[in-house]
Amino acid sequence: MGSFEHELCSNNWGLLFVSDQFDIPSALHEQLKDYLATTNGNVDDKNYAMKFNLLYSVYSVPNIILPFFSGTVIDSLGAHYSALIFVSLLFIGQSIFASGVQTKNYNIMLLGRLFYGFGGSSAFVANNTLNSIWFQGKELALAFGINLAVGRMGTVANNWISPTIANSISTPLAFWFGACMNFVSVTAVCVIIYFTIIGKRWFHDNNINSVNNIDGQNNERSLTSPLLEDWQEGGNTSSDDTLDGGCVRTEEGNIREMGPKSLLQVQGENKNADNQNEQQHSAGNIEDYEEVETPSNINQSKFSIMFWILCIQCAVVYACIIPFNNILSGLLLERNYFKSPPSTCMLTIPDQCTSGSLAPSAGNPSIDESGNTCPLSTNVQPILPTSIHVKAVDGFDHKSYEFENLTSNDVDCSDEFWSKACTKDYCAAQQRATETGGRVMSIPYILSAILSPFIGYAIDRIGYRANCLCLAPALLMIVHLVFALTDSSPVIPLVGQGLAYALYAAVVWPSVPLTVSGGSGTAFGIITAIQNFSLAGTPLLVAAINAANHDSYLPNVEFFFIGCAALGIIFGILLNVFDRRSGGALNKTNSNT
Image (cartoon, rainbow, N blue to C red; front, side, top):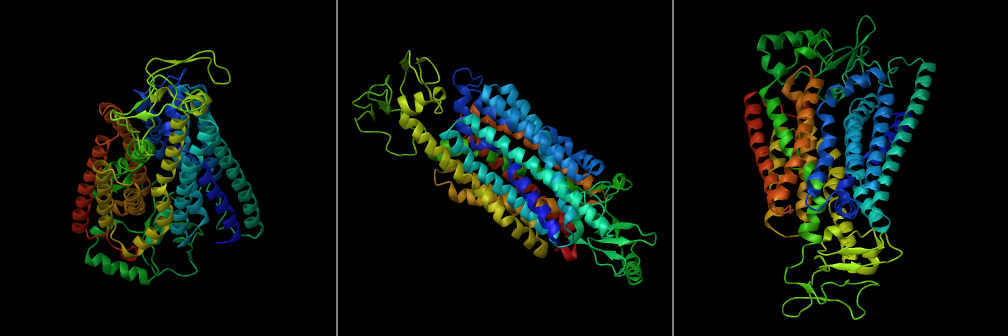
């Protein structure tokens, strides 16, 4: 890899890092709830879970269809200019969303997430295409792994930085900070385009014609074909005619992309055909290889029963990964870091402020029926007043604060009336809890970032993809059983979540081409669409379960995730059964596939 590719790849990783603002609502689950539910907000405590999860569903809806078309756009305009369009949509979407938060207008927030959805997955398709162009051979798998790792680190940074901004300054500013990061991603793509233009001139000046398509425009290679290069079968082509990345130069001087045979082709070969192919290989015949998806062979795609099982498993397994991550902040607060106080714990003076400049000078401690101070744990919510009647106050967000039946939904800790004058202890505890939760919920992403390149490297060499497709949901099931049935520290189960996440992502996508015959790009489009269909519907199911469980995630939402993981295990077992009957392509190493 030359220095030119290093420059481009560095800018591309910057694009990945700063554009990963998808999870901002998750990191600010509690702050967003408090901000929207206060005066002039159109979200209340009863419908917050549904409306929060709808923010993720509306993002996924466009991506049920877009995977079938984004590749065409990239092929037509070039990967770099397509990336500029897509990241601009991210910036526009996040800006609209931040405006909706600023004005407490939920409909504008939904519109922003919809725009963000139009740019989200397509931006990463363009990003992957750029890597496919820049890297060849063995470097490609490493590049994809590192890109995934950097993207996960962007999520980690979001989980750490966003709650701090929301707690120390304001909730809207945290979302505007996300918009600024998306603008940086637009700038990064502009830098990439600039280097591309300079690079093409350099290639032209040095008469290097085989890489004229460095911008990805009019490139006849499938967007997914570079994923297959490491699985290439060995053919005895002439060294003079063989190019990097599995391409062969024909007698006419054209470059032809060569790809691996997939599962269904291997099944169809007989002994005589094998002998004939060996003779052709020794003579330098290249016709044994399948051309990787061109417009002429898309209609010849054959999807095996294993492919459809893989699609269904992908939908149910990701249903207990991504939607779980979306609600993880709220779940951690409910389960570990900001628990509801016992009903027997009450303030000494129930209708007075608890701490701050407006609290009684003698204090207003909370006590239980026996007169003992409560709650004792720092992970339990401090007791709020039952009612508040404060009129004609200056220096705060509102002129008066009158609540006959005060609930946590009425307390906005970004307003100094609550954070400094009336419920200082409650807001301080909430700030500690949300920031701790943000750090803890980063564990799966940190592990995924660290392990993804190494797991991908190991799977390429030891195989056992089908076994791993069964192991990952089994690990997820254990994780969600721990969350549902115990109140232990969340660290260990989240380590398990991270391991399962990294393992499953490392095996599910490389397994797709091994279950189809031709048309791998179409196969990737189908499985991505099915995945996004699941990711659009699952958050709404989670919200409905939460509402039916009296606005509580535990334990019923976790039971739902356990059910999804159990289905994943069943489909994983089926994959192993069919894979064994079909020759074991999924469990073989790349060299034997």
